[in-house]
Length: 231
Image (cartoon, rainbow, N blue to C red; front, side, top):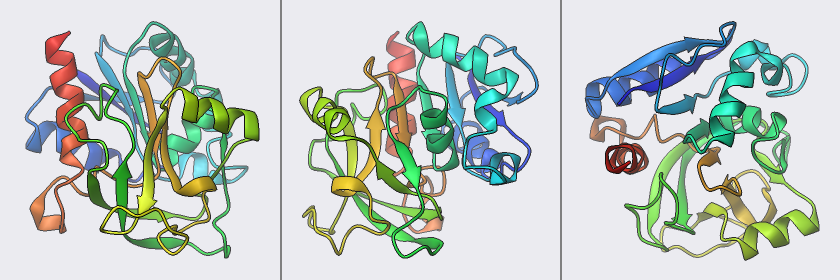
């Protein structure tokens, strides 16, 4: 097993993500440079948070054209697991690997704080160790985390059980006050039609060790690793 972590100019959570796999989960991991097309035989791809290409045009819009993303799209089309975190979620949406778009936060302010997430599905390589309704605590740190999609897409996401997480209260209630950025129906993460691609705005990479305040994020990486071991 080997897991790849993409690196774009401006990435700032690539080492956090690498550390979780290497030091915490103790699994083989390698960095994958944006200008390369070589996935180095990796069995899963992690697209970390940060500010790819400085987010100078639109978040994720430049990164979608990176040579490495062509390989990631082929990998995902063949069923390979891909997880995009924060800026990585934005990149996956811009690349067409996930539906919808991430817009400016309601209030037009950068938000960095702990949030609660209710698990909406455990039918994926990333969430299968969780229980439906289980509430996780993770931090967010973004300016464009306001998830939006059209009515038909939302209906499809619901029908196919592809909403992975929603912002919630600690008790798991979905309320307007629990929504930090204005996301449609409190959506914090979604899955691809094949269920092998996950995008989420909160940071499991920043919440995988107790010293960081919560280790709830580690459950997603453990789920991915368990899926790869089974496969």
